[in-house]
Length: 101
Image 1 (tube, rainbow, N blue to C red):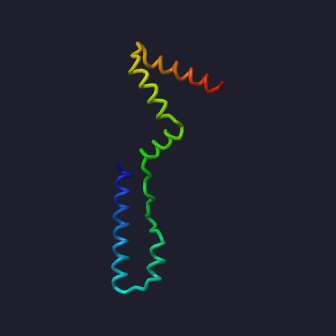
Image 2 (cartoon, rainbow, N blue to C red; image 1 turned 90 degrees about the vertical axis):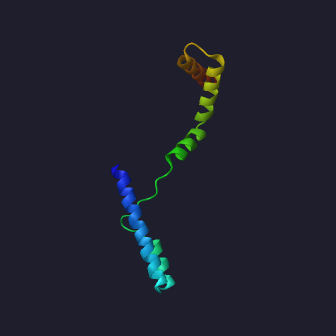
Image 3 (cartoon, rainbow, N blue to C red; image 1 turned 45 degrees about the horizontal axis):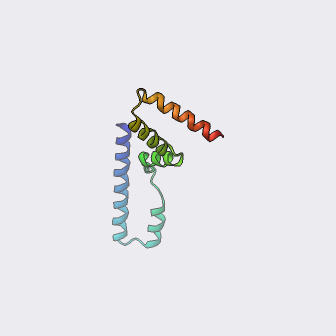
């Protein structure tokens, strides 16, 4: 909860800063000063949080984990073994042996 509060405060500060800069521009500050100031980040600037779900999906796709689990679960649903976890482990061992050959 504290992290959310920090992010919220940082966002409010960033919005206030952007609004102040916008009002300064309207009031007649020159374009060169505006470009320089827009490149500077406030002291309390917080980098945007990366989407953890998207990051996880990319990782799983990169290492073919999604395809592996899809194949294993499809096999489990189709064959309905008594011990699905043991069956999955045997399938993975078989895949490892085949990959090693």
